[in-house]
Amino acid sequence: MKLTKVIALTAALSASLISLSFAQSAASYPNKPIKIVVSFTAGGTTDILAREVGNQMSIRWKVPVVIENKPGAAGNLGTEIVGRAAPDGYTLLASSIGPISINPTLFGSLPVNPQKALQPVALLGDVPNILVVPSSSGIKNWKELTAYLKANPGSINYGSTGIGTTAHLISYFFAQKLGMDATHIPYKGAEATRDLVAGRLQYMFATAPSVIPLIKAGQLNAIAVSSKKRISAMPDLPTLTELGVDIATGAWFGFFAPAGTDPAIVKKLNETTLSILEEPAIKQKLLGLGADPVPMNVAEFTKFVHNDYALWAPIVKASGAKPE
Image (cartoon, rainbow, N blue to C red; front, side, top):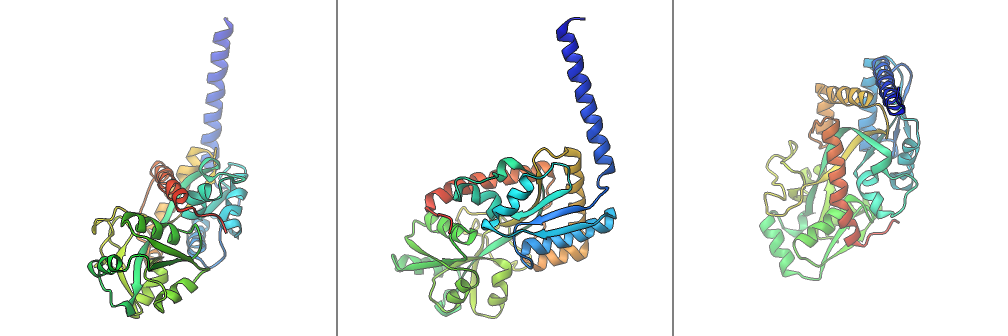
């Protein structure tokens, strides 16, 4: 037998054995504890979603699902831990738009690049940002806001929860779209919202859960939502796209596995996660966080992640943002 035929047969046999091994591992998966690394502290949206879904996974699969909070380096620590883990489906990452789509450009160089080291598994939720203004401004709608912005060039300040956060970058993107000269005032956490309520800032983009209570209390006025479609929590609030501003993005959260994980296991994780998110109690909790469910299969979520990174990379560069 010619050497080329031997090589071809050997390659075909190896491929068959690998496929068989993958099929067997997927069929028996999971048969030991699963660890979900959360890139942020306990109690935040990422952590809440991971614990809700992880608990249901444990019930369904009858194996422990352990949540480990690994905050640090703006979410990069969790990315590194999972990016370096064995690609066997037993170490997963719960993360969000910042570490996955923004940090690769913001930091320039990372120990582990999430766009290369991670396999997208499932979208847990897409939480939109709401464009809000202080109610003391008297501005109640888009027409009044744009009139105010045009009448006050050079004196517009917007706040965010920190340099390079989605609140910062969406606000910067918004100013660029309107051709407006606006000054970014970075804060740490809730101080930004407090200064907005006090009228020290003119506008801000903030996640729906953080501002809906203030909107209902009459302290802030909602002008628009950054999502592709209107949100269930505020169905009368128009999207920016409806108002002629080409921005449709929010603060999303998802599960990831190390790159190279068996596709059959990734598919099993995706389908189980989507099924859990459709359970009435879980769905209601998701809506309570201001997140409308957006079910995506593995291919759709992978494309979503890649497109989101492509959207934010030039915005991060143009903003001049540097990690704090």
